[in-house]
Image (cartoon, rainbow, N blue to C red; front, side):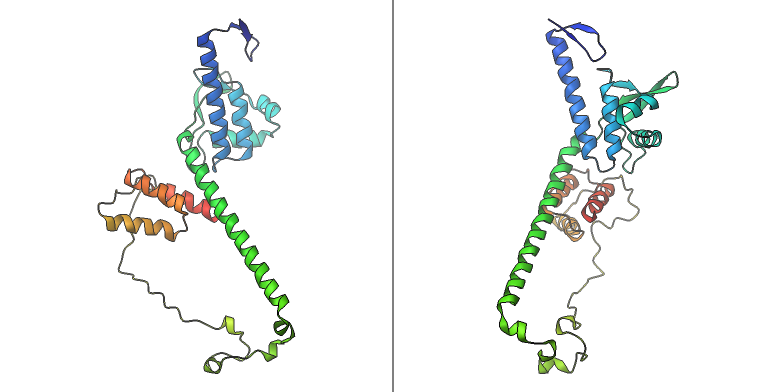
Length: 265
């Protein structure tokens, strides 16, 4: 049995050829999935990497694509193609290289296509999914709370009939609150105690952002690190992931900062 490849070349369909084609297709699918989920990439980068993958030679994973053909395949402007190629070549905040230059063919740069974030991609998607689920649950809970409050106010004739001037201030508090200050806006005493003599485990001086944190040697150090993750707003899933990476000696400041930026987005 024979088949025609994407370049129009006829090949004999052998078991080895089928396995090679399956590997190529699997690599392309993983690559597109990774770039699509990578927060360092833009939508135009996904279009461009798909164009390079369509022209990729297997198993060398090499491809060359002129700017003119890239524009024709993606619908991007010349500037957008140039900017995307730069990001895919490692000019991004995490220095992830999807297009690694190997040589030139005439005036066109030949790239080796890499997938450097493949192993972390699924973990990242799981963490972001949990974050969005938590956010959605919080919004739904807030909407339900507002509905309950609105219903309670609507059903209470006393609340509807009572004007603002008829609201009483407790006698014990009246002397401490300005006459024009609503009760719920009155200053409240902050009983929080901040111990400035206790140094956070994450406060390691002069730590390289890409250098792993030291592995905790005691349960107290591990508990301090986990408390830091909770304090910056990490979800339980992220805290568990960070604990695992910390104990394995793989957790870096860049990983923590990336999750902090994603949490704030």
